[in-house]
Length: 194
Image (cartoon, rainbow, N blue to C red; front, side, top):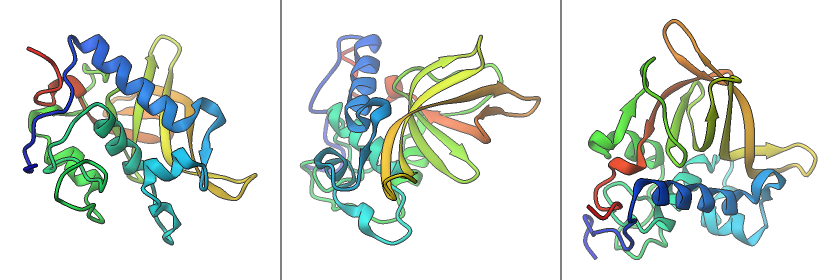
């Protein structure tokens, strides 16, 4: 398989693609119940990397969802279990999502909004998560996130979260972070049967 391999799966329409992305992220997080270090699904999503000191698995969830959708372009996808030749590389999860995806990455603007299944890029600090829903009327956003910490269990966790969404004078905000942009799944080449 080469770096530019065609997706292993194609979706008949955008709604089906987005629903599949949300479902993959929901499964990875077990909804609001979460999945913690040691859970077999958590280990699958993180490919057992979350044992490294200082490691954050937020990018692992994004790349896991892309793989589950059938995406196989190794110029973007950063996993060992993607069926390709390139091994996972440290420090490239976020940069590949933002800078290697071309027109599929949308820089945030006051008049644009991500849609369910899109991979959000937030900062500071830098973080990525999968959008479940955006309720602008009530100022709320629901996401699926890895790279979190469960204080009760004292372990890394991935789970569904809900936080505030706001439109400022210069930026869109998700909780205390700025929404820098998002990977629009419908713009990734080959996932939609066109």
